[in-house]
Length: 470
Image (cartoon, rainbow, N blue to C red; front, top):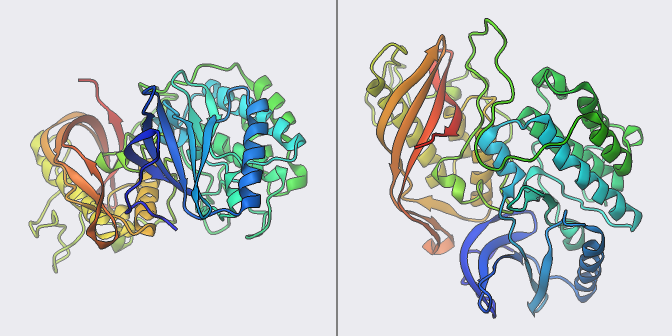
C-alpha cells in the first residue's frame, strides 16, 4: 500500500526528494551518506515473502551479468522487516523516455534504433534464461546521462505480482488479466514503446473500431523497414511477432543509429506544403506539476483514458460558461478569443483561463478538466492526465499551484492556431497526502517557454509546449 505520506529514511543514505510513482512502488532521490553519490531508492508498496525476495535477489544478480549497461543497476536490496523492501539503484540521470517524448514529441528514427536495438538484444538474452520484464512502457525505459538506454524495474511487476494499469496500449492485449505474460508480451511492449517514440502518441485505438493508426500514417518520413519492424512486434497475434533477437536485428538493419538527444528539441518533419494546421510541435515540457510525476527521472508516467468529442460542451477550452453560453475566464468574465492579429496581451486571458482549469484539476483531483485544456492529439494531455491519476490514486493532491503570466508575445500564427512565447512565475506549492500531511514541496520558479494554441470549434486549446532559450 502506498506510504508516501509517511516519513521515509534509510540508514546510510540521505533521502532528498520524492521522484514519482509506478506500478510497484514509489521512487525517492537520495545520496550515499559516505560517498555523496546520487542514487534512487525504490520503496515497494507491498511486502514480499521470503521466496519472492530470494527470487528478486537471484534475478537481479543474473540481470547484472547480461545487461551490458542496458538495465538500471541495483546496488543493494534492503529488507526493513516484515517483508518491506527498498531497492537502492543507480539514478537514471538522463530521465525516462516518457519524459523525453513529453518534451520533444516524436524522436528521430535514428534515435529510436539506438533505443530499441540494445534493449531488444537484452530481452533476447533474458528470455533465454527464463526472465521477462513484464511491464515495458516509456516510463520504464530510462537513460544514463550520456543517452544510453536502460530498462528500469526489470521483472519487478512479475515478482511482486502487481498488475500494471494500461490505458494506452503498451501491454499485450492477448494476455488475459491476471495471467503471467510470455516473452512475446515483452516484444509487444518494446515495439509499442518504439511506436510512441516514432509517432509522439501512445498506441491507443484511434476510434471505436479498435484500429491503431499505422506508423506511416502518423510519421510518413519513418523508414519503411523500421515502421514494419515495429508494427510486426505489435501484431495482435503473438505467433506472428518476431522474437526479441529477430526484432533487434531487424531494427538495427532498418536505418543507421544515432545518439539520443536528451536536451534541446529537435524537429523531425515539416508540415505538408499548403497545410493550414499548426506545425508539428516538439511536445512538450510539462508545466510546473510535471516535476512531480511526469518529469520523474525513473517513473515518469504515460497515461490518459479516452477523450470527449471536441464538439461536446465538455471540450470547451474556456469552461465554465455563463448561462448565455458565452465562454468565461473562470472568474465569470466573458472572453472573446482574439484573432492572431490582435495585441499579444489579449492572449493573457485565454492562457490564464486554461491554466486556471489545469490548476483546479490538480487541486481537486478532477482529470476530466484537462480535456478542456489540451487538444485531443496533444501528448502533454496524456502526460498530465497520467500524473494526475497517479496522484489521485495514492490519495495525494496539489495545494497552492498556480501560474502567473508575466509576459506573452505572438511569435507566428496562421488560420486556427497561434504560436506564443511566454514567461510565467509559479509560486511555491505542496504535494499533500492523506490527513493533510505535506509529502513534497516545490519552490518558486520562473519559466520561459513556447506554446501553440489551436482553435477547435471556436474554442482555444493548448496543443504544444516547448522550452524557449533565454
